Image 1 (tube, protein in one colour):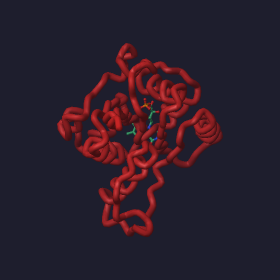
Image 2 (tube, helix red, strand yellow):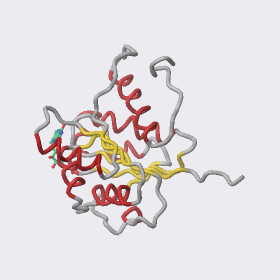
Image 3 (cartoon, helix red, strand yellow):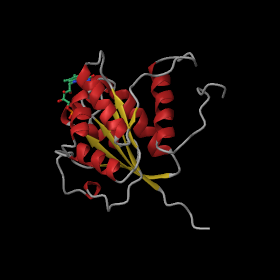
Image 4 (cartoon, protein in one colour):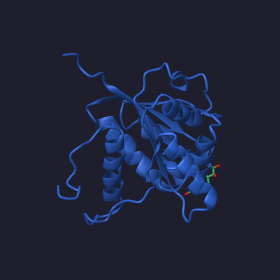
Length: 194
Ligand SMILES: Cc1cc2nc3c(=O)[nH]c(=O)nc-3n(C[C@H](O)[C@H](O)[C@H](O)COP(=O)(O)O)c2cc1C
């Protein structure tokens, strides 16, 4: 029987608070044995949040694993800009309301919005972890548009039933759910009934 090729996943970190959730997702994707490559896209405000909240520069995040490769968000000629390039899904953690709106409108004006658009048209998983509160009508409509186009709207609303010991515990439990949506389920004692 032919072996499954190692998965290629795109992870975008955009300019919303909660970049620690993105860092946890990056670590967990990189350590998953079924994943061969994680393409990391970080918006300019995403970089700022990463530094402010996690004390990490992009280079620090890339040093986590050789499976992480960075592609410039402005590089619309990058391989992942084309549906013909083999990729297996994308998560945006955290996703700003701005990026959600651009994806909902199909602007494809940067590599994050283009890669998301490609996932939707190619029917690949697109997991949008919106971080905003409260939500206005525009956010709600944009969420519905992306949902109806095939995306998974997964706001950063972690569960608490496992009695998290701290932020890292919350980050990890949420990363488990992101990986679930990308078809990469992992054992996790934080699961209900685990
Ligand atoms: C420190 C900081 C925190 C922010 N937090 C949020 C947030 O939690 N949610 C959100 O939707 N926008 C937030 N914003 C605003 C977005 O970063 C801004 O709208 C930006 O244009 C989004 O573009 P991007 O998605 O390409 O990063 C924040 C901005 C800054 C500077």
